[in-house]
Amino acid sequence: MALTRVLLFTQPGCLSCELMKVFLEAREIAFEERDIVSDPEARREMIEQYDSEETPTMVIFSGETPEVITGFDPVRLDQFLDPTPSSDSVT
Image (cartoon, rainbow, N blue to C red):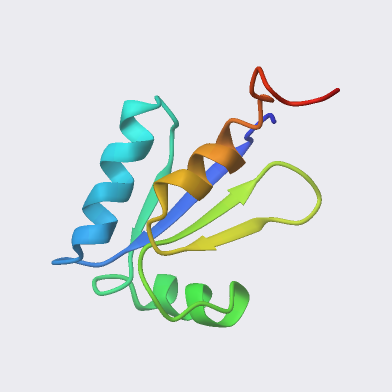
């Protein structure tokens, strides 16, 4: 998957947000961070445009429709960000 843009909505004091940032940085995935506390427009965008009321909310732009992932679930993120089939998958 060719990621064209990753948008990450966060807020101060959010442990899952910090884990998400470390996760993305470790995989060398560039992202734009939007703090919903210091940026009211970011908060409105997260709620109204991406239908999320929790942080972290990650929006991945790679096709026509952005993929929205809420919370920090490293297993799901790995599956989504690296869709390479495992050696035991049938092709």
